[in-house]
Every structure is written in C-alpha cells, then in structure tokens.
Image 1 (cartoon, rainbow, N blue to C red):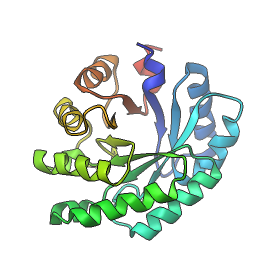
Image 2 (image 1 turned 30 degrees about the horizontal axis):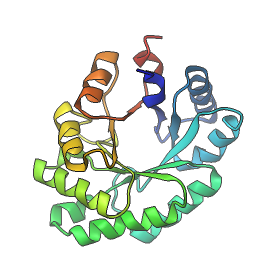
Image 3 (image 1 turned 135 degrees about the vertical axis):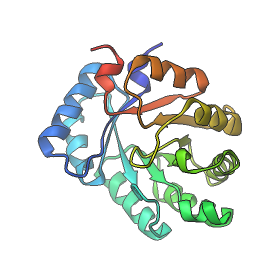
Length: 213
C-alpha cells in the first residue's frame, strides 16, 4: 500500500502561521502526501508553494460548526477554488441533521457541490455527535447531493474517527463514494485499522509519523 498517497497532511489551527504552513507544504511534497489541508486563508499560499509538486491543496468550508447559510458556504467554496483549492471538505448542517430535515441537508451540500467546479467535495459528518441511523442518512444525503466523499470529523468536536463509524459509512455508500477518516489518527496501527474498515483517505496532522518518519 502507498500509504503516503492516502494522506491529507493537515493544519487547521486558527492561529497557524505562514511559516508553519510552509513547513507543512514542504513535508507533504517530500513525503508524497496527496494533499495538504489548510484553512481558507492559507489556500493561496499553499497553492503557490506546491505549484511545482504533485501534492494538491484541500481546504475546509463551513468550518468547524457547519451552521453557515448554504449561500455563504457556496461563496467560501468559490473563493477557495479561485485561490487554488482542488478539494473542499465541507461541514454538514448539523442542526438540520438533528431536525431530520434531509431536504435542507441536501440543499446545503448541493450548494457547495455546484460552487466547487471541478474540485472534489467531501462532507464532514461529525460522526461522534450522531447516531448510527443519522450517519447512514447523512451519507445517503451526501451521495444524493453529488458529493464525492463522506468524512468522519472536523477534529474539533468531542470525538474523532472510529472504526465503527468508518465501517458504517462504507456500508452506506458502497464503492460509489470515498470515505475519509479524520480526527485522532496519530499512528500507523490506527491508520491501517481505518483502511481495513473502508477508509480511502486519511486526514492527519501527524502525517510524517504515520509513515514512521
């Protein structure tokens, strides 16, 4: 397995500096990580630093609460793509999920998908806050709205990725969508457990450590 090609090398701390983002990009290019995942304000910098490398730029939308209006998430997406983002990780409308308002959930995701152009869209479900039935329904809504991936967590909630959640997500989307495990993945053993459960992408701030480096 080419472990490096599974990893979104991530730095989403709100106080991250330009120097820290530069180090992140250097590590990603050196290790062959698929993407760096940075805050929207750092997309242009990351795209510039990686323009001669295969590593892509991913960013987050509606982060970390997911409570923004669909129009705001769409505008944030369009701006990120214009700055060089190739992948968008958007946070689902958790309030709409709790309400069981799946039409609103789909509309929220679809707004980002429409604004994303050719960029890949991943939907962050925040699985630690949801029941199994909500996770399954959220996966179905993400697929219906045109997303490319479902993702476990922001890393800013009460819990991160779990093998059980990843397995449930994979069962819900089959082989039609990708599944990204993110949140609390700090060693190779956990990474491989997530992959065995069905993850096809790993989000981690400890990318180099996952390769044993």
